[in-house]
Image 1: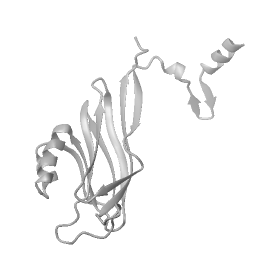
Image 2 (image 1 turned 90 degrees about the vertical axis):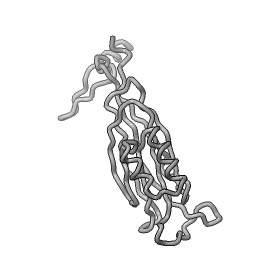
Image 3 (image 1 turned 120 degrees about the horizontal axis):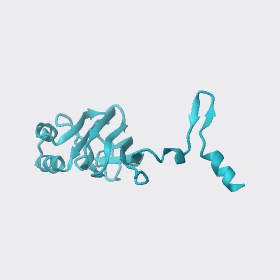
Length: 180
């Protein structure tokens, strides 16, 4: 009885135009997909203190993509910079940013360390293809050089901040270990 049930589950199931194939039928595939949500739904970014999240694409991964979208509150003054950088690019960017260089992102972009940059925006969608290696997603809010800092603070003492609501994921294919 149990064997008959398993045999039924191992066959494709036809539903109108669509065919559902159980995982057992995909053992012949050379790769298996991986999807990782990189960030929580909401991140608070304080003025002058970038939010940085490191992630790694494994050496045996293929077709790696960092893809997502984000919005920033409060609107309309909720502008942030968002970057996807290599590990080396992050080090360069931090050195320039800590020295007060407002052009840090542009300078690191010229060296190839920044793979994606959304400048002073309140919403963005993006997709970046990646090779195996270590990367960082960075959200940075530095206020405006021309205007005084605003009063939107989230830490109780008035340090201006921005609430970034994101859906950012990393996807890639790994070799299927069952395929030999």
